[in-house]
Image (cartoon, rainbow, N blue to C red; front, side, top):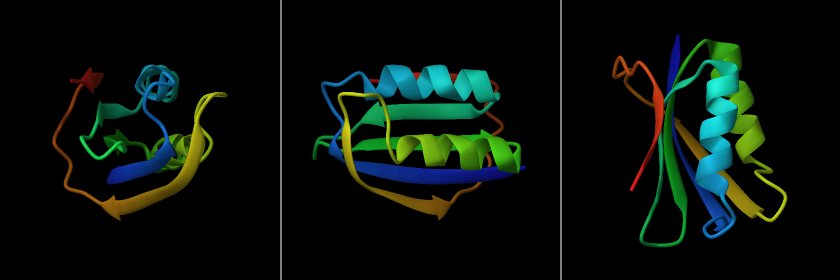
Length: 89
């Protein structure tokens, strides 16, 4: 099991980034959350199988078609025991 926190910067708000991140997380079986930040970035917490979490982070480096990701800063996190992936507001 792996848990990470990531901050995605670039043009990532107003392009359905959170929606598609949640969709991809569900496909991969990753739990956690995604939310917009006041500074224009998107933050996420992801936990689950190592490969699945890595795949979600890798997907975030590109995101959905309208997004223009500049950077994805990732750090290890503590598992929260999340049972689903959700979009937070």
